[in-house]
Image (cartoon, rainbow, N blue to C red; front, top):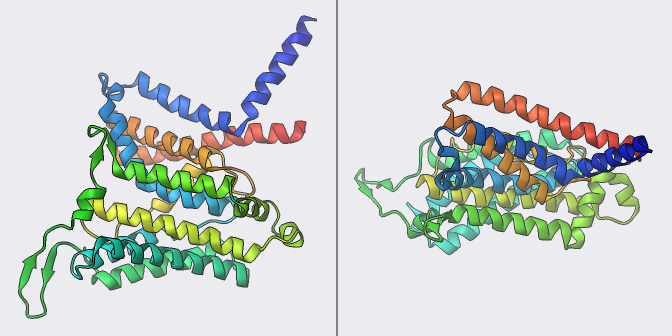
Length: 343
């Protein structure tokens, strides 16, 4: 009798742990526990540490919102880091040397990112080219275009006129407005933008018909097509949304750096993918959600912050981050497989 009760208790615990959200929270709890143990004389417990962490992950988290949508369709987008740089350069060019108003500059930049993402989606859907190849090509193209537009240098308030004279412009007010803090300097505007993108992604995936289409395409594209799902348009929308979030991230990055740098955003696509995967969204498509990505973003953010507080070198931090990501994914995969086998 005792053994029967123990078995039922073990089964209930296993079922609870099989929940994707619970599985994603375990790595986060482990990382936070490490922060509590290695807190560097209480630095980890200071609110400034958590506020700084939220600000540091916000741009990457915005990218991860779009990446979540693409990965749910069983795709991938390697171009988001380069699109971020292209949009950062474009936004800086529009608002500084060209002197265009903030509203119009934002609209043009968001359109640029959305169109670039839609092009990747169209090539993937229409010609059935692997998303890895299409977005790799877009990554190279966007980075090159960013360097072409900026002349290979940062776009700043320092302007060289055609006659050879130079002048320094005032930093546009929109830059300061985006890179400011609210609620008693306790929360960055960029973090609020990140949360807004997460809310928009949740709405897209959970409350709109297109969300069901995205999951259906990721689960089985051919079955979705036979069921009447517009697979091509669904893929175009997914990559267009990812391009839109890259443009938003580019504007935020330009505001934080107070210039447009064609070299910025390198490797950001890997951080975005890591956040999505750490949360437990399946790279095979059809499963996952923005809530899991938010947990993944916090896990990666706290991991990097704990390593930084304890003065690990950049090289060591990269190696440890990679190892812990693999361990977290293997942990989630184990329980996912166990649940599939028991089902």
